[in-house]
Image (cartoon, rainbow, N blue to C red):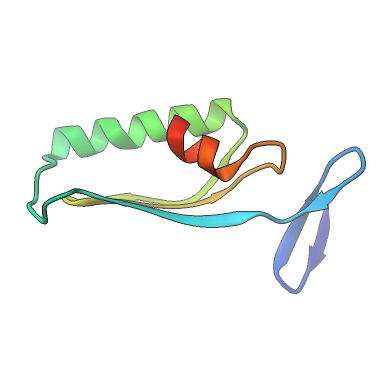
Length: 86
């Protein structure tokens, strides 16, 4: 693993990569629709799914009207596919 100005780079067989993304999902209407039980379950599902896909979660917040994620995705996965799958 390399470290540089931007942090630690990950390495593959023939690659060195540093892919971090900030994702935000917002409800259609600005109402506080997610209760504590739904938010807790949403956190569990996101963490479980990310672990299975080798996605690193740096920050994972589930508020009453949005989901805020900072993730690192391997270059073998497209960002649109990861968002769709999560």
